[in-house]
Image 1 (tube, rainbow, N blue to C red):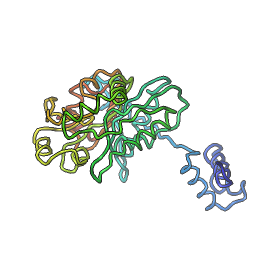
Image 2 (image 1 turned 90 degrees about the vertical axis):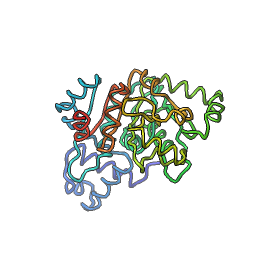
Image 3 (image 1 turned 180 degrees about the vertical axis):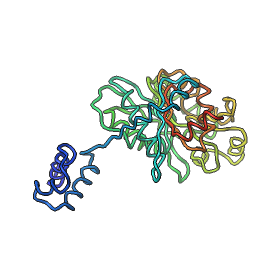
Image 4 (image 1 turned 30 degrees about the vertical axis):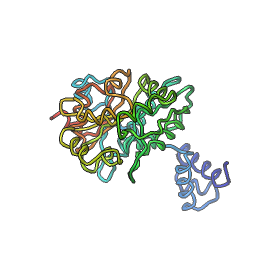
Length: 310
């Protein structure tokens, strides 16, 4: 429902953003005060009547892009530069969303992981007039702790942006036993979603660091001994599959209890977008790229240089 404030904010936005008038000029044309116009422009942004996209040519033309694509045989890479006072997560989310808007088209199946980076990507997606898109959850995301995976929130935002239907996995990603996991995944509905995840046209995911505060280690799935095993042997995870420095599975018993796409199945998808950054993720990103898990990469400048220097 569009109310009077919405209408005024749209009129103000058209004059300010579309016609290039100053806020004072907009105020004079609409018979309002300049502070009121400023508030209306803010309201237009909050309501989604106006979206602002920043195209940074450095994301594509930087020498780091050429080095990354050549070294890791990538189809494309975007390297973001976060200004002083900026937020890395916001920049990764914005660049990731821009790349996905270029890649997703009618009739595609899009597989999603979860986490703070993925949620940031979802928050920056614009609504596109697509048809026949299906968004598939690649792994379970229910938390047994106070930490949230934000999986449902991320799925809903992707679905809104791409005018898509969703296929949800309302399960924990790691079960207490392999037997329980096998029993649940034999369910016809769950098995169908997992099979769809294995065959998506495009997968978008992040890489997780291994640290005591890591989200994947604080969802109530793991015992203290299992957490220590992962801390001792893993350098990162993709889709909650923990891997070692050489790309092997770090905790086979935990992996056997994990519900979601395997690294082998992920690697078989035609388009695979890895969005990740930050110094603590350097080794995880490097190994994921060496394993060939990504065809497209979104990363920040400093981490990109660290990945190449390892």
